[in-house]
Length: 322
Image (cartoon, rainbow, N blue to C red; front, side):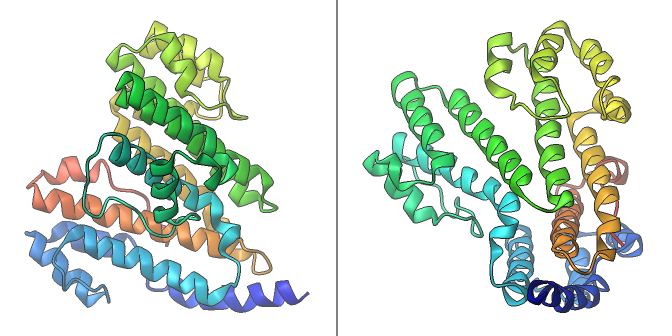
């Protein structure tokens, strides 16, 4: 009962925060801006700190603000590990390349993972993979070997990316919350479809696909791999038999259009969760809504900076949560 009461309080706080989420009107206001600087003025009026002037720093600060809120609301953030593993494996990939290739890139490591980036770097430097969580050890060791022996950066990425997907799926399946399970499944399935589509366009082999695709419940990845070797039409024919049949027009158009389709599907799935006040679901839904908001603002700011047409920007804009 105490846990339920904690969630009731947390959800009540989230309800008030949802009022400040950007809706379609705000996104249209940003789209109507003539310049990047005009966009920053709108964001400032909405309470965003734009003093740095840097899009990446502004967006990172908003993401950190969201996680700070979650730290205030609940004592154990491990319930959100399914959202954070992507940061861990990004940091693992960065550490492997930085150490093995003896390079350094400023500000390459992400915060808000479940593992301290310094620990990841230390494990790679010492080649002591036992310092890492079990879910990361094999991928770290194999990626280092591939990079050091074969100088194959692409296969290094494939190894770590698949391990990340497997970790997300495992965390989702271990969750007691249906929304988190759905999130994990959609994350892995959509990544598999993107990999398959890109493989068609780049002429990847069956061996590559079987190494890259992560098994999940809603796709037969062995069949997906074989269809990808045959071409895009074969992939679409297979998707027609899956829960992702509606993605066909987006897949035909572009990878970015498909990514938008997946994000919009997730938004549609999480909206009902705001009405479950006795569970973690409304907080998880808010996290995803904020991430979607940040992603959409990034698209608009990038469009203004690079002077892209409104049409090209709009085709990538996501549905809003509110």
